[in-house]
Image (cartoon, rainbow, N blue to C red):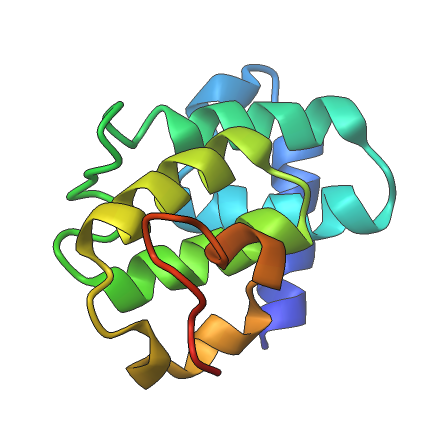
Length: 126
C-alpha cells in the first residue's frame, strides 16, 4: 500500500503545473523516497526545502513531530535515507535538545552512529 501511495504522490508531483501546491508533509516524504531511488536531485532538494521549512530554527516543529522525540527520530532516519540534509540538521537539533532516553526508541537504530555520537549526547546505547 505504501508503495502505491509513493508512486501516486511521485507522479502527481512530477506532473503538477505548480509543484509547490502539491506537496504536503506526507507526500514530501513519499516523493523523496522515489526521488532518491531514481536520482532526481532537484526533486530531492525541493522536498528537503519543503520539509525543513516546517521546522523552526531551534528544531521545534508542531507540524512534523510536536513534542514527540520518536517522530523526530523517524524524520531524521528518513532524512538520512533519502539525502535530505536540511531536514536532517533540524531534526538532529531537536533530538539533541530533547532526546533524554533515545535508547528506548526502536527507530534509533536506523540513524547513523556518526550523527548521534556527539559531545551533547555522548555515545547512544544501541
